[in-house]
Amino acid sequence: MAKKAQAPKAEAKKQNWLQRQWNTLKTWAHDMKVELKKVHWPKRDELVKACVSVLLCVAIVGVFVWVLDGLAAAVISALLRLFQH
Image 1: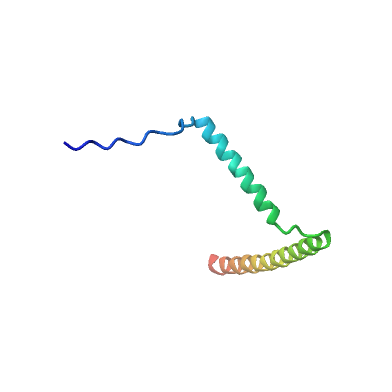
Image 2: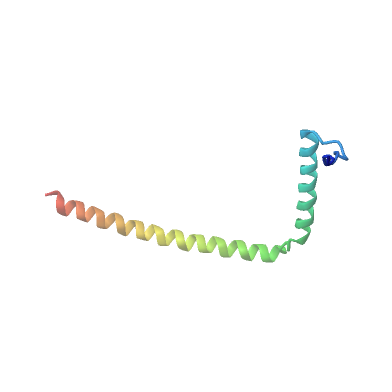
């Protein structure tokens, strides 16, 4: 008769849930540190220019939406008054 193949024995003791979570957290923190070293952090003048341009764009879009909202409200009011009688 042929001998049954034995299942390979677990070489290392299986870690419990807390150890696995701790190892996962350590790996994540290490990977985060490595990635943050690759980031190009802007200088102060670059940051100020970017913030000013973002605020300017937000203001322009805000005014545009405000004007369109006013026009839409005026058109709807006129239509309601027209069909009210």
